[in-house]
Length: 608
Image 1 (cartoon, helix red, strand yellow):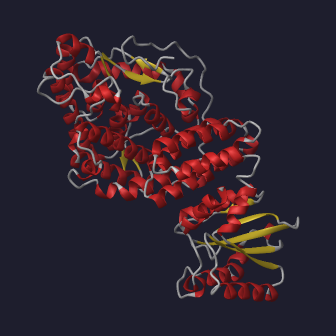
Image 2 (cartoon, helix red, strand yellow):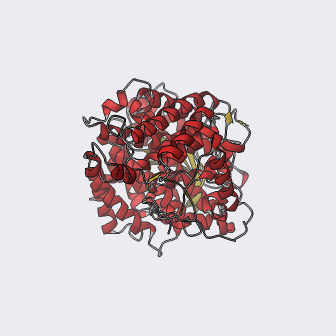
Image 3 (cartoon, helix red, strand yellow):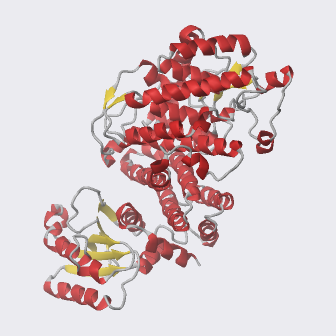
């Protein structure tokens, strides 16, 4: 029953960035060495993918693939379009083959036409006749046709072969795809599949991750057909972290094969960004600037549901922007002020700024743990000069809503809740006693976030208000942040909520001086930060992703470049190349972890 699931997956794939993205994974599973992949903006001369390796007859050959989506029509075969298949095959023979590397020129050549669907009967004679004629006229060249059925068979014999994907795992994938419109159930099956595949020590790490990339792409295509990308988004985000936990030791220590695990992980990042673009970039951000449009689209009557959904959306949008910021050529090692607007990260920041202005519900988060989402959003907006004013406005609105809620709980905005239980959130205390109010404000991660952002933006007026408010009304409140400790590296990639340590009892002080001094001291003394695998290997954006998934505040180290750094000029709008992606391993840091401070407040659930 798995075959129809995968076959339908291939039929729905687009040519660019989907079918030509999964093809290299299939070829690698067949034991071929992929030489080149499709690249947008670069003329391919017919060949989307090139590979070399042994054919079914045991001979080493050069394989050149031209990829087309769906079923092949007459126009797509030899029509006037530049993307027609027959002209592409001619270009491979007469142009592309002349430019291959010298060591491959003498190899027998196999030119393969790859289709996501089938060849209809009225087109099949044209295709087969062409291939037979070309083989007769060109000795040393063989022509083949791969349809969706061929791709499915190759996939099940290679990347998803029985040793990696036995019956029970295929059943989990089938259930995930079938229940893609029921996110809670589908994600439960996907999590079980991810845990089972990545935990199988009988298969090497790269093959395990490749298998899950292909499986997640299957879920992605089914979600797109169903018009519901919630499951593919959460699945790709889960894979982004779990795959890192499995591959980073290989990337860091296995120098003889370092490029292989890096290529595999790059495929995971590409998959996440594709899902993000299809879900958020294409469906949501075009409406970001329309007043209340996204709030209305939640489809709820209760303001609580709208607030929870929009704050969560802010975190997702911001995370995509931070990943694009990390991928920019010449970007700093940590988030910083970027000069230049011609890049994807800036486009996302501008869309987020519109979202914040058009949906006032995000000005008053109803959960204290939304400090994670607001922290991601404010961090991204602070990285670009033309979105900083929106960051200042948003930070002021949210901070003042928090202060009014604490001062006037009966008549002001809703106080951010420390309790994440939905039933408790539905029935807030209407007229709290002083004891109940004190308990409700016993701790806060939002308060230090507002003060930190105001410090970054030099908002002295808001800093003065927050300092006075903390002294007069929240002297009992444990204002705290989160920092990594020596035991949280692997835990945070596995999605465990109990990891790291609290940074408690933060005071704002005049102009935010006490807060800034405490955070700088923590950054200087916390050796665990530099020992995080993502920081050692230059993948800081994964820390932001882990914070969002495990619902802990952004660590102060992520803000340090904005507190102290100079602007970095970025003018290119292209992403990093595959070689730029593999950042060099940093020098080994001094391994001298100190005992981090722990909080006794109700929010001290990170200290492990």
